[in-house]
Length: 380
Image 1 (spheres, rainbow, N blue to C red):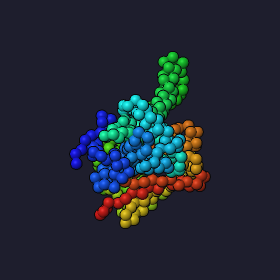
Image 2 (image 1 turned 60 degrees about the vertical axis):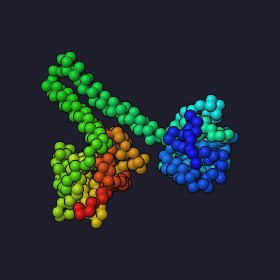
Image 3 (image 1 turned 180 degrees about the vertical axis):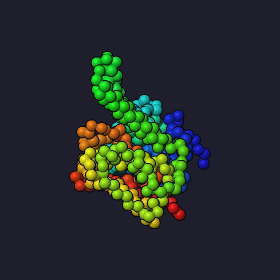
Image 4 (image 1 turned 30 degrees about the horizontal axis):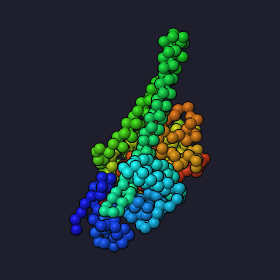
């Protein structure tokens, strides 16, 4: 049996055997059609073929997944469901123009679950003809992830601009004051310089955090894995935070195996993880005497690490967003010395880079604990 392409508007890269469309639903019993349908069902794009009366001749799995809970069936029509209006419109337009037509649509799916948000679809349709039969094919691509990425990028740029503008404005103001010669008192002069130094350090921290996130997301290189002692890594983080620890005076407890706890991973990332978690705990709780406990437990298959304190805690309304970039809890927004708002985002990405996960448990006013679970490689 010979094969030939549909007319100029045919699905790119596909061939239909002569006589397949004449058979419509019965043709799906043929071995060659089942094979062709199976191949199209592997496509990530939704594919729909209808005749000129709107009767569905073929629909693949991706199409039905995209438009759940609406189910499109061979031999039926699209109907008048609100969620399928865009499909009806592009089919009508392609039929009317007798040429390839493209459009975009936004759809909020009316059922619960992780898909219960606005989806962005790219629709393309064109006429086909085969012998004395004709109709319209439609291809749908899900661009939701692309739109979310673009929105995240826009939000990120906006947040970075805001975070850097604030300290820059303060530094600029103090520079103008110093240039005016209005400050004669040495103590006032030192205070101006201290403020400028504090905010310049804040900007440097934001830039360093952004570079760290960029490095994590680039994924151009595999992790530089080495075996290290977790307890030693924690102690290095505590030493790095010595000035803050001296001010807060927390009661710190380390609970690790006698050998210090071995773990394979990129030490740079784990320095970031422990430094950010400890720093957040200390900055969230300005009172002295905070009890801070860092512990590690090893099982046959995973390493379980935790950072726990008995401070103010994190409210239930803040908890779902703490790992989001630049997000600050209500208590943080009232602090005089603010962090970059990137710390926990860095922690989450660093843990996930090692195939692990992190979760938060908090009872406001009593207890806050971050729990990290990392799978262990065989022989580790």
